Structure formats: C-alpha cells, structure tokens
Image 1: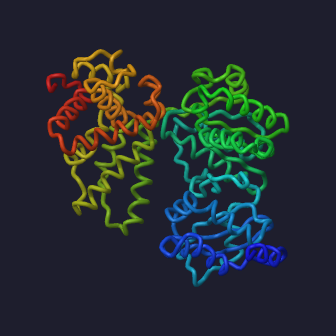
Image 2: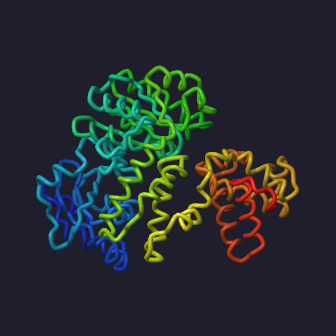
Image 3: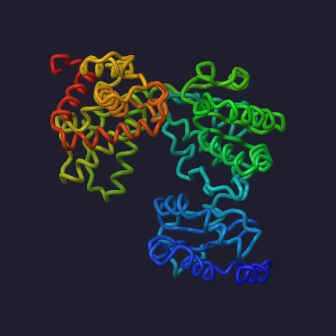
Length: 470
C-alpha cells in the first residue's frame, strides 16, 4: 500500500533520490548499501530514464551486473515512466555533490538514442566512450577496415552490411564501438554481442516476450553485432536473426558485423545468412606488422607512465623487443607490456632483456612455431601414451581425464582461442568443462611438483621444439 501511494503521488513529480536510497538500504541490507549503493549519485532525470553516476568503472560494472535491474524496479515504484537507468563514470563523484553540471551531462552521457532492452535483466550500455576513432592505433594491417568504418559513421548506408573479420584482439570491437559512438547522438543505435543476442532471444521465448524482442531490435537505425561466429549451430536463433537482418536492411538501417573469420568460413551458419553477409563490404584486419606493434607499445607505455606518475621506465630496447617478438594480436601485445609493468612494480625495478625473456617466455616464438590445438593434442597424447581418439572421446577414465585436462590447459595457455572455441576442438565440450579443466590443472600444479614439471616440459616442447626435454 505504501508503494502504491508513492507511485500515485510522484506521477508528475521529480524523483526523490533520498527516498530511493532509503528504500535501497531496506531492500538490500545495510552492508551492501554501505559498500556499494551509497556510492551512487543521482545526476539527472529525463523523460523515460534517469542518469546516475559513480566514481570508477569497476563500481559501475559491479552495480550493473548485480543490482541494476532490482534498482530499476524499485525506481519504477516511485515513477512508472522510468524504463531504464544509465550510469556515468565521473571521477570524484560523491554523495555530497550529487548533481552534475548539465553541460557535462550533455557532453558525457549516452543519449536517449542508444537502444536498451526495456525491463530485461541486463540494463547496461555496451558502448564504451573510451574506444573511439581518435585513439584507434592505425597501421597498414587495419587501415582499410578503419577507413571503411569511418565512411559508414559519416555517410550512413555507404556499405551495407559492413562485415569486419580478423583474429582475436585485432581491434574489431574497437571499430564497432567507434561507429556506434559516432552515430549514437543522431540515431537509434543497438550494439550487442551475438552471445547477448542469443541470451535475450532465449529469455524472450521463455517469458513470452517475442513481440517486444522483435520490435526492439528491428527498430534500430544502426545495428552492430559483435562476434557473430557464436551463432554457429543455433538454428532457432539464426532464423530470428535472419528476419531481423532483413527487416533492418529493408528499412534502410545500417548493419555492421564482426567475426573471427570470413562469411564463407562460418561453420554451421545458414547459407542464406552467409550470402547476406557477403552481399555487403567484407574486410579483414590482418596481423599487425612490426611498425604498428611498436607504435602501440610506445603509446601504451606513455599512458602507463602517466598512470604511475612517471615512476615507470621501460627502455626502448625492451619496447622494441616486445614489438618484434609478440606477433599474434594487439591484445597479446598489450598483455605482454602489462606483465613487464607488473614485474617493475613488484620488484621495484625495470627488467633487463634477459629478465624480460623469462617474464614473457610462454609468449615468445609463438607465431614462428605455429602452435595449433592439433599440435598440442598430439604431443600430450604422445607424452601420456594414449591415442587422440581416446582423449577426445566421452570416456571419463582417470587415465584419459588428466591428459585431456592437460591438453585443454595448454591450449588456453599457448593459444589465443576463446573458451567456446577450445571446447569445440575437444569434441564440442561445453565451455564450463573447459573452465573446470583449466582450474583443475592450476590447482594440481600447486601441490604436485611432478605434474608441474611435466607440464612445463610439454610447454617447452610445444613452444621451442625441445623434444629431448620430454
């Protein structure tokens, strides 16, 4: 009865954030409120959504993933018109100064044109304001994809669909994000991963909300979908995506797609979908050359110097070494630099070249040796004296489980394959099985010196062809 009175009273009035805070404290408990929710500041109220702010990205992501849908339902008891919540990251945001300058809100907040799935579980905006065209590091390997993305952002349906493919960590998501960021102020933008699209599709079927699902996705002016290869084998979702894709193209909406392979190489994807993808502009992002890798290392090093108050001094020799040796992906390149930074902070010194080689030993010479899952499986089977058919079978005998887990662990360690991709290479095992295998080996290594030594020897053989070590 109390909530009903609150709703009637506030139909035409602004939200009282203090009252909502009081209700949050009652709903979630004092500990959760004091630790997380008290740190949320109210910034502005618009027609059908409110803008809140927090001081860090971590805080925003934590609140978004765990509490935001419940907070939205609580807010709706005060004002039913509110359909979503956006959270802005504002440094030095505090409860004592909850109202931001309106010009700052206009500059930094995601506008009303960015699409959300109303009343669904995830209430967050995938578009990252920190990934834009200006900070995309350009090189010969990604120049064509970059220029095509900019043309789409400037000229709308110049290429439709635009299909960008490349390996893991090559910058595909950054380009999609940049397009969405550029167009969101004047268009209804939907940016979603294929995995999230599938999640919403299944959830809509279970809740009998397919009409809302169809209307919402097909209402976008710009539709960006990331990692479309994850639709493989999911026939019902592919059927819905096919009709969504056609509806968007027919109404003149711009569609941008990313994947880890070209359309004709997509496994278990309907031929008519692959044909639609191929009907637009298909562009690949190749592996970064040395010049691009070095440029990225220089830029990231300067950024880290600012973050650590110039106490970080990574020599040009080390930067060039990382750039020349770590070749698989940009993400792996930045990861290598982060390892050097961690070493510097832990030991309060910058590693020399020899120490750098030790820190990055599992990354070095990776591309030259062409580490593949097939190589890993073969060497592990040889070591444990089992056949590959036995390892990939569904049998759970102990003498097969440990080699299988070891091969999965080494695959995750020595390749850039995602968990679902690894699962597919091990007889279509679920990604949760892959996670369990990795954690099992990690735990066993801590308490079993012999196993740890065997895995290190296997790793060395795979990376450096040191067969005499096994």
